[in-house]
Length: 401
Image 1 (cartoon, rainbow, N blue to C red):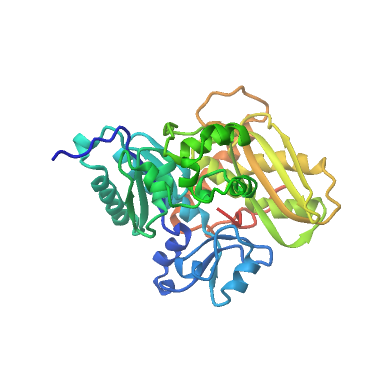
Image 2: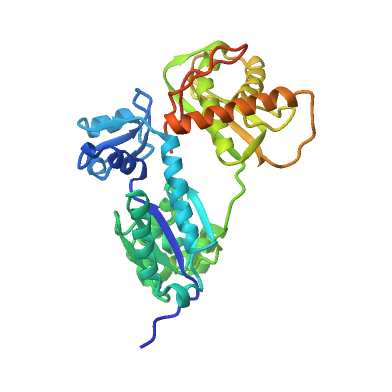
């Protein structure tokens, strides 16, 4: 009997408890213990947690104070974003060894279009298990893979047998595979949509599939048509090889409220260095800069501007942010500050020259030299001394993924 032919073969690969797994890999004494990676302050947020911590109900994006209540014995480690990003790059390279069509979703997650590879690589399940093995051999981390004919079903499948699982939904079996799952598993079904569906006595994805589509459309409009199709496993959306990244940012929730321009500058400096380092590592420059401030009453303020020329060094980014700070009313208590580099373009893209080009080039050369030292000796091995309007204060970063 010949192998079943797949009209499309879509993999969804999800690294298992990625940040926490890296911490355990690098410090084996943490193995088997409840571990939380995230901001440790009263306002910190869980970035990710080990499976041992998840047994206590600790999950990503949970406030740290709540996580500590649920699992007081947990060990908390601050995020090491540069380490995670480096591992992610290696993992994505492995994915690209299998297919040229890889769509990253985040540092630890991607879709891979393996359509048409059966004659070369074999059946999809076998390919998935070889991919798992290659990832583990390269970075000593496990991943879970969902294999299906669509993005939607493969995404659900990858979560079925974590950690280190491979779940296959063969062609033609999508509706039966999805039928017993709660309808909340469909992306985009929030509390409002779920309430409307429950009011129709619909509880599972199979209930939606069996319900008259015209009634769903009459009740929910285009959302009803989308739900009807997904409930049958119909999802023709292609895997997109790459997404043009529109921004690169970082923010931090402060352990105590601050106020005033000087305090905001102090909180932003390490974030700006992380953003600039990220731009250089990705071969990008920023044509715009955005300042983000969240006040103690949770009101959000953003300000944006364009530097004279696209930049990738922290000094130039900070000069632009400093201009925005100078125009903002920062007298009220502030609980969060952030910054983003926007209007990103390739670093080698030609740009119009300006009077600022010479000092910018000097700053870029200096910071690339600092990058090289840090890559060899670590993030805290070198620091910039005081300069007018700018001072290197050490590494920083966002509280969540």
